[in-house]
Image 1: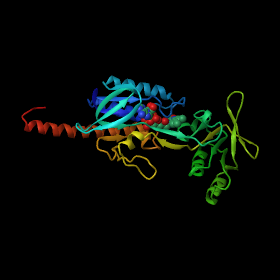
Image 2: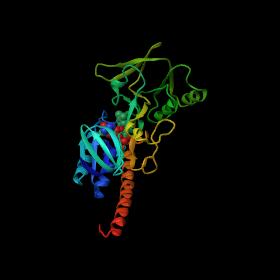
Image 3: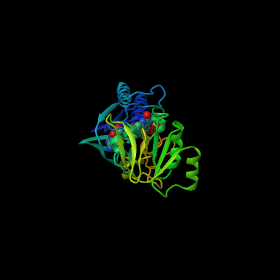
Image 4: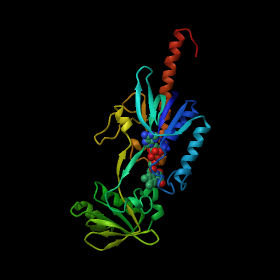
Length: 312
Ligand SMILES: Cc1cc2nc3c(=O)[nH]c(=O)nc-3n(C[C@H](O)[C@H](O)[C@H](O)COP(=O)(O)OP(=O)(O)OC[C@H]3O[C@@H](n4cnc5c(N)ncnc54)[C@H](O)[C@@H]3O)c2cc1C
């Protein structure tokens, strides 16, 4: 079995940034990555200073090269289970038949976007069905945009999408809008269509052209924004007993430490709001905290050694 100072599960922006900092700090690091980052369906990544517009796969390939360049290991695989090794205080990762030991564990496994059950939405995800206006709003500015409502906070989300166009329609099941939400939408000239969305209309060139209502005409639209439900990939953490909040999200401190000693988490797995740049930042902050924690071990070991007449 191979042993490392730090075992990282997940090789997206958070995991690779942590691995870069730790390998440059001369820690032995392994990243085990399944290879399905959340933004993989997008052709371009936006809003990351100095990397705006690069394909997500290029960004991560470059990151992996940087980690490997400093001696870190990045391997493909799925971690199915993590168990605490009581005798050494380390963690054992079971990944596709491999066993990996880490003195510290960092989980950066991201999240899954669960879309509303509207026929055709999932097929057009990351093309002309989008969720993040900060990621792709600029690219579709001034087009005929729509927001698929019906979930908590969706009317507020529509007000944010309004920043990118004057031609916005809010689709909502009947009876859900509060008076305050309705007056806010009307005041900012956001069209309101109440009814059931039956499906999407796509033209011969495979472009979205409209939203077909069950009880009414098709509403012409070029792009739809949808607020998904965010589902964290946090089972490995909850299996270890990490504390969660009332909504089931794993709790971490400012540096990503969970309630379980030796276990950190960063990026979308604990923060649905994290963009690529913030996920990378959280990974970096966790790495610095993990290294400091390992240094504390090193100091303890050195003092023990000193008392036993060894030298470090
Ligand atoms: C369509 C779309 C477009 C987006 N565009 C942008 C954009 O332009 N700009 C921006 O800033 N943000 C964008 N985002 C958000 C961006 O995807 C996230 O901010 C970012 O991916 C978070 O990084 P992360 O490292 O936390 O998670 P991820 O990037 O999702 O990485 C997690 C990694 O962990 C792996 N993994 C999961 N479970 C396991 C396991 N058990 N074992 C091993 N590996 C595992 C996954 O396969 C994945 O590779 C977009 C999101 C979507 C959905």
